[in-house]
Length: 159
Length: 149
Image (cartoon, rainbow over all chains, first blue to last red; front, side, top):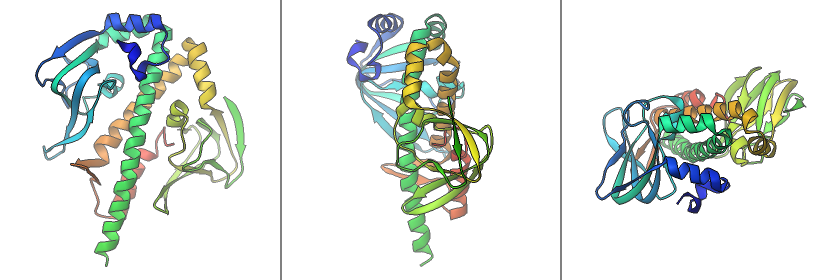
């Protein structure tokens, strides 16, 4: 299962096998909310989800309550990383679109895994760090684009 | 980590170019510059104890900002290749560094995604587009932090 995902390339076969045993695969016939913005990571939704099949819509609500779609992710995406590691509330809502299949790894299981298998711990955290770095670079590009737009608007308004 | 000395004006990171990786500023001061569309925004100075380059350490890609020595400075540097070898060969020793990295990156991602940008369909806009000052203040709030480059 996991060995087909680029995200886990480089992990040893026995580590992959261990991860597969700890993950709970869930089938979703209809749209279901996996994670909800604002929920505490150590509450009922304390898990990381790996999307195996289907699509998941990631949405955020603005301070005014308006929902916006941040992105739609495809198989291989890991969801719920940020809150899992910084103990803050969920930063986005993740909802499956249509039929999908996910693998769930709950917080306690993950922490136990990380305590008992230092090799897995290091590899898994490196994967998480790389995904976070990729997300930050994507936002950095958008920040630059928004800054350019803001400058253009400011120049236009000044005539 | 390897020590490296910088003279005033030397660039530690250059926007768009490969950089050294993780750097800890031991002595001196560094200036952080954000380059956008040919314009350069001065995001201020960092002092001893500042840590930079977490993103580059884990993905080995190019620098997202320019960082220049304001005066004679000393830094400790760890490159991406050394980091990969550390993680794969000595996972016990790499543990604390990895925990610091994931916590720092997660925190920065949260602030960036929640505090700076809003998305309206396909268009991203700054939450406070009123003035250049507010743009810079918001940029400062998340860029002048561990993980700048």
